[in-house]
Image (cartoon, rainbow, N blue to C red; front, side):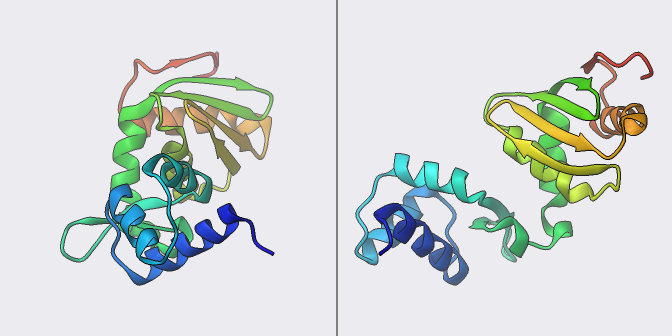
Length: 164
């Protein structure tokens, strides 16, 4: 038997595949139409847990979708803009890169880094203000730091790496 949360989240995934849902309010309404009573706060948590992203539609609006269902080029400009404007500080320990971001942007920054598909980065994990990126070799850390600073076009990003 599915829990209410599991049922609701599965229904959210179905709804966003079938409908252009642009706002949390739209999603709450669509869920209510399906007989699931919920609040915007709950839907907000579900969106975060499901890792949903907003992607552009053909008419220039945005809709919720699963990251894997969005073609990388469709979201890359949006993600790169957020990456460029949100990264505050870079630090490293061994082969772990710690990226400090503006509040509530770390998951999007992590998705942007994943979209880069750099072979040096094995994966990312985004929280609220912090992204952890696992680099495949400690020797590649300086190179990755330089590449990220270059993407951000901001030399003022603080870093603890001596070789940058």
